[in-house]
Structures are given as structure tokens and as C-alpha cells.
Image 1 (cartoon, rainbow, N blue to C red):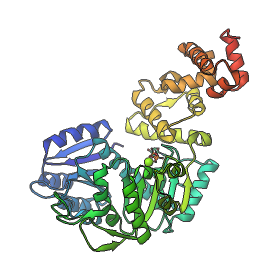
Image 2: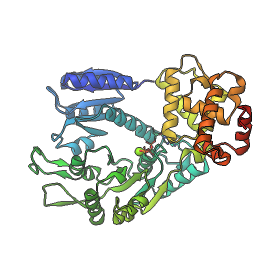
Image 3: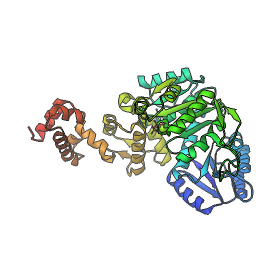
Image 4: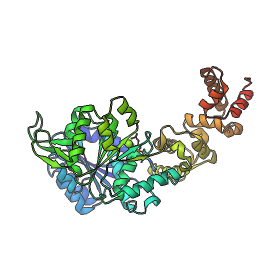
Length: 446
Ligand SMILES: Nc1ncnc2c1ncn2[C@@H]1O[C@H](COP(=O)(O)OP(=O)(O)OP(=O)(O)O)[C@@H](O)[C@H]1O
Ligand SMILES: [Mg+2]
């Protein structure tokens, strides 16, 4: 089933660019060039997602939002607005908008926001993880993942701050969302703030909001993310990238549980639950004085570590099935299957980019597949190369001619790097000394 998206904006350039991006991301796109057209479209067809400009000739974005919600309440509505004109972001969120994007934004941001919303919706539909670890959404039944799900289940209703750690791509953002969706806050806002992607000069006004006239360009007052979150969850992603002066400000918010808009003298109570995530070692950052120790202790009340995929390879099989199904549907290639050695190769690989890398690999394999059967040949080079080193099977099968040469080159290069030291070379290649010995013999290097 393809996802149907309505795109409504009166700026034709935005329509053109976004339409292209959304199509490329696999969505079915319908467009409207003003508010009236948007309303008539939503009255005549059903959309999964609506991307609506707030200010348009004819009916405005809020009116379109209301019409959509009357017609089909589970349509995901994302509003787009020029910077500084969102005065009523809170209103829009209350009326059921899922998110709003401030122009100018990166096209990728739109796709990301839509995908996030679709996933969050899937969570809600699957009963919001009520059953603890038998959710169908966070995939994995390794001991490590069961432990993570268990902890989530125990802490979902607390107000304590949670710090999620783990390498890039292990699922930290997904887990933060799950924590929100599982607990008592599930119907309240989940506000994602990516500290790394916000321009430094915008972070402060995004987080705290501002009053009208607080600075040049502050034409209308704007609520900050803390305010928008209300009693929901604030997710501070990539927290380690926050500049030191903002760390100080955040610390004050956490200590006093109050926020003040820029240019305001009144403070408001901050009642959101804070969840932070980092893929770098914060303790290290504290030692190097890049991260405040007092903020670190404030954030690190409950720590949840998400282990890298290579430490829970048992999950790979399930993840393959899950992503295969998703991309079969997305690309309308339901007959695609993987040959057994494709599964083997995917299990052998160490996945430095974790689940994100696995997901991307499967997406590209399915997208590019011409035949219904995916063979080793179709896998990304780094994955088949690794398999040929550890697995050997493909070389024997002879359907992978270059593997042997490549393997030889890799081994020789590794030997050089390690000055001929066999033990170290084997370790670097991730194979046993015996296997290395055997391979060297085959290569006639002794
Ligand atoms: N256990 C899982 N089951 C299903 N999908 C997963 C799982 N873990 C991660 N994913 C998917 O893998 C991708 C990467 O996950 P996510 O963005 O949560 O990683 P991250 O740890 O936040 O990475 P980064 O540190 O780069 O922000 C996402 O598309 C996410 O939905
Ligand atoms: Mg993340």
C-alpha cells in the first residue's frame, strides 16, 4: 500500500521541489495550490499524510487542518510555516497537527518527519506497546533487546530524566519514541529536538520561544519547544553537540523546572519528561570539558544503553524479514526473496552503522533488484567482501569471481599494515589465526 500525501502550498517552487522529493521517497503525491483547492481535495479523497502551508490565499492551513480532521482523524498533518509566523503552533498541535516545520527547511527533514509520524502511528495502532516486549514494532528478541524493552516497560510512567546511549543507528530515537508511546503520555506531544541539526543561533529561540519584539524579526510571539511539549516528552537528540552556554541554560531549566521566553519576564512551569540521547561517550566529553558535569549528572538519572547490532546478531534474521516486508511493499515488489547465502552474508557482517545500515542495505537491494531472487552478487561490496573473507562459501560456489582476488588484496594489505604479524592481522580481519593461515597458504604466501 502506497502512502498518499497531499501537498498544499501557494509557492509553486516549494511545490515543485517537495513533490520531487516526496515522489523519490516513494510517496504518492497530490498537490493543491491554495487553501480552497486543498479543502476540496480533502473532501473528495482520503490522504494518509497532508503537508500544509499555514498561510495560503483562500482558506488558511488551520482551516484545512480542521477539515481534514473532521473527515479522517487519523490523517497525519504536518504544517509548514515561514519563520516567525507560527504564533499558534500550540493551537495547531492541539487541533491535531503532528508536527510543524519552519521554512526554510531541508527536503530531507520533511521526509523524516513523515516517516516518523507513520511509525508513531504504527505504534499507536499496534496498541502502543502495552504488552511490554512482545511489540511488533521494535524488532528483536535477543536477550539484550528483551532487557531494553523490560527497562522501558518499568520506567515508562516515571517523570525521571532518561539518558539513552548507544552507537549511531542502534535505535535510540526509535526507543525514545517507544518510551513515550508506551506510557501515560502517549496522547500528549512528543517533541523531538535534534541539537546537532539546529543552527546554533536558532536553538535558543526554538527551545525557549520568544515574545513579540524580543529581537529584530520577532514579529509575533512564538512558544518554545518546552512549552509545546506541555506534559508530554521532550526528546533532546544528540545532546553532546549542545554548545556550552546552552548547556548552562538547559541546566537551569532542569533544575528550576521553569522556562522563560526570550524577552519575557514571566516564567512558565516546565512539566515535560526529558529524554536525551547521545552516540558519543558523555563521560569522555565531561573529562575533556566539552560537556558540563552538572548537566551530565542531571540527565543521567536513568541510563538506557542500546547495544550495537554486532552484539546481538540473533536479531538480524528478524530485522531482515521486517525490513524486507516494508520495502517489498514500498517498491511494490512483493515476490522478492533472498537466497540463503544472502542471509548468511548479512549475518556475517559486523554492521558498524547498526540497524540503520542494515535497513539501508535492504532498501537498496530491493530497490535495485531486477529479478525476484536476490543473490550474493546483489549485495553491497563491503558486505560480500566481508563474507568471502569469513564465509568462503561464495568462493567455492564460483558465482563470485572477483572475490578471491579482492580477498587476496585485502589480506596482503592487512599483513602490511601489521608488519607481517599474523595474530594482529587475523584480529584486524576478524578471522581466526587458523583461517588466516589457511587462506595465506591458498594464496601461496607463507
Ligand atoms: N529494533 C528495531 N526495530 C526496527 N527498526 C529499528 C530498530 N532499531 C532501529 N530501527 C530503525 O533503524 C533506523 C535507525 O534508528 P534510530 O534513528 O532510532 O537510531 P539512532 O540510535 O537514533 O541513531 P543516531 O545516533 O544516528 O541518531 C530507524 O529507521 C529505525 O526506525
Ligand atoms: Mg537518533
